[in-house]
Length: 245
Image (cartoon, rainbow, N blue to C red; front, side, top):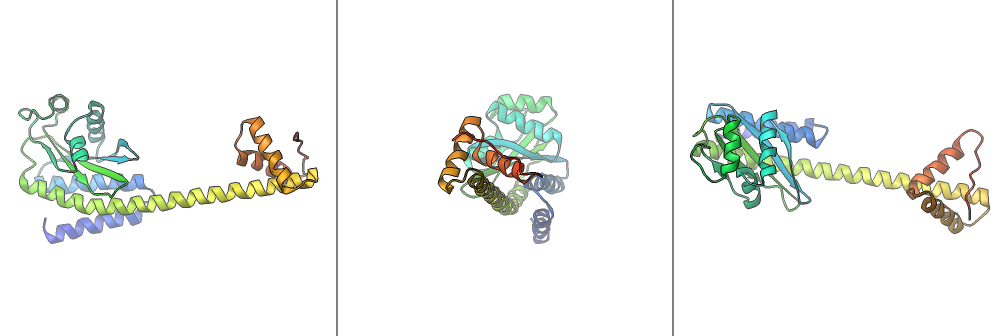
């Protein structure tokens, strides 16, 4: 890959992270950029799908086309293929020609029927908690030359750093959302106990026991019962709430 091309990939993927509001958009953008880069390198159309493994769950999460996504999902349903082997081994896997390569015969039959002649699986380095692989699909055999494979590996290196950043951002945002939800729940519980203390003239401990008993008898989460108490109390007229001790 020429230095200018490498810099262009870095700039495009950086803009993708900073300009997308969610990780889904980032994943889809990566496959589009990957498809474009490989198509230019090979001089022929090449589609791309992205498979992500997190928490031991593997799934096709994005693709540059509906066909790429469909083929990637078929490979996963079969349980074998260049993409899955690349993901498991952490190394490039090439299906050079579906007509002659017998490495994955069942998948090759599907690919041939769908007009796909060759496939390249390129793993991404994402760290300890996640794994991913780019799955490239070409309609012609022989497109994945040494030069094109080198281009794919170089792009994967840049894309891997992009996805690592995106996943970290998503993890932080999810943690913030969880903390906000926990704080809101704690606030509702405290306010509900205050309401029960005022209505029942009881201690904080007794109010919390009443709240827990109501949660158990209704088979509802504690914070949901607390939110209902707060909501009803703050309605006009402060509707009294009756709970059995």
